[in-house]
Structure formats: C-alpha cells, structure tokens
Length: 107
Image (cartoon, rainbow, N blue to C red; front, side, top):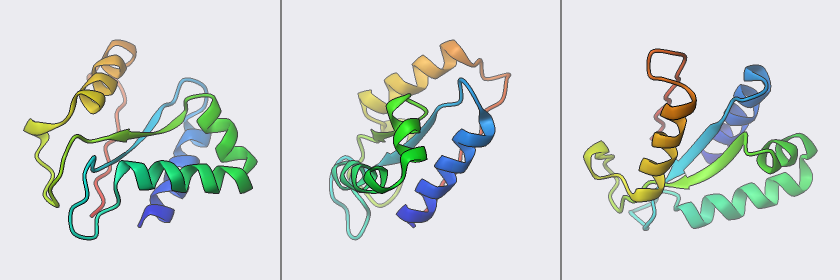
C-alpha cells in the first residue's frame, strides 16, 4: 500500500504541475499493522535516494509526509493532530475549498 501511494503521489505531483502539493498522511503512533509517520518518512527518504524525480518533488515541497496525530486504525477526522490541521489550513489559504481538491483514503 505505501509503495503504491508514493507512486500515486509522485504521478499526481507530476500531472498537477507547479504549485501542486501532495501530503502522504500516516498515523503518528503505531496501531496494529498501519504504517507510522516515522516509517513513512524513512521509506520516502530511501525511495528518494533511488528516484531523482521523487527526490526533486520532495525537495520542492510537492510531496511530503504529514503525521495524522492519530493512534488508531480508524481515521477520526475530528481528532487530527496539529501538524495535519496546520497543513490543511495552509492549503486552504492557497487553494480555497471551492477550487480543485482531491482526497484519497487508503486502508
């Protein structure tokens, strides 16, 4: 799942062009077999070391990992952490909700 989502993020960042920002969100704390933000960061760093396009996207801020603030296998959008809330707030300032947004849930 993680590999597929990273590939999707890379493709969306490429298709979206300049100004497109993709957040790969993972649990802050371990929950069953879910990937944590720390593991996702490490995976992105490893993959970016072998993929110059993804590395450039990460360096430009087009693809990033954001912790959800969650510690459960069930996503509760009422209990997101400050990092995810901050990222979404920043994005609303750049791209109003009435404009183009795409949210993909995997799990």
